[in-house]
Image (cartoon, rainbow, N blue to C red; front, side):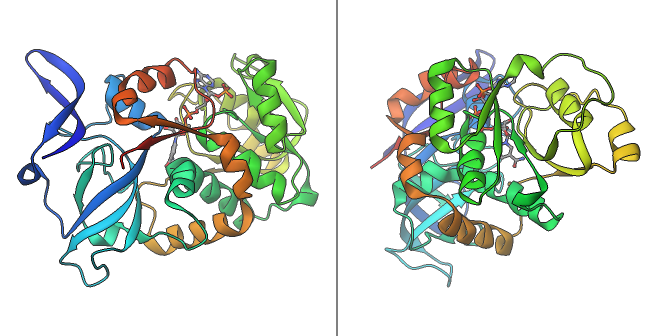
Length: 327
Ligand code: NDP
């Protein structure tokens, strides 16, 4: 038996609780991993609280990230004792995820832990950090360089945002953070390298189709009016990497920024991203993210605290990343 969060849905409703799970309940797969750490992402918070349609089958163990040690393997890529990480692939949605002491997975979803990172650092990065890196790579592929001008990052004190701010500033970009947080958290964002912090309230209500051109590039995790207002204030040929919906699913924009200013809106998905691109993103994280920043970004909690923390994330009351200790 091992412990894990189990989400159930039946006639008595939707609920998540820490339970004892037996090994023969584990889903199909060719690699069994003894988990060391998992994380709580916005998506895990939606799954645990039931506030978003993340879980596709029940019962489900949530957790879209994990790092652990291979216990047994029928996959030639892995042998017992290897340390591996997993981000996405529908784990924690369709297939039991990382918020348990043990998981059985498909070996093709795993990648070896990069030698530059400890298991704790890898999870302080997690899906959020790997997605931030995918966004930055996308901006680069579309011609963005530090000399082009300011880069705006929304939802900046969350997981994706805080790591995006850290990497962009290390790469020499002038980073402007958009955050709904108070001054104390502004201090957090300045410490990560943001040159300026703008309040969320300047972005999250209806605006004009076009405004003053300001941003060379943007990373948006918020969606809704925030994304529409960013589109309207991009510089000529600016590029936006859009990856989130923390402020809503809608996109109340017009075509004006795209047809009059040649703005590019690039979507970024981490879940089904091909393996080679994941390995490249993790290589870039090792190169371009200052590990000292991870200490500022990471919060460590236990499995038993995870359900209460999922509520905190939904209330927008967390800063940085939440790592769950399973060892
Ligand atoms: P977090 O909860 O860590 O951070 C989200 C941040 O968004 C918050 O910290 C807050 O930042 C801001 N925010 C929260 N609520 C609102 C609101 N109502 N309006 C405006 N801003 C808000 O989440 P993650 O960083 O893990 O994820 C961010 C988004 O990106 C989520 O929507 C998530 O689903 C998505 N995502 C998508 C991925 C993909 O593959 N496309 C992968 C990973 C995440 P502040 O207080 O600073 O304003």
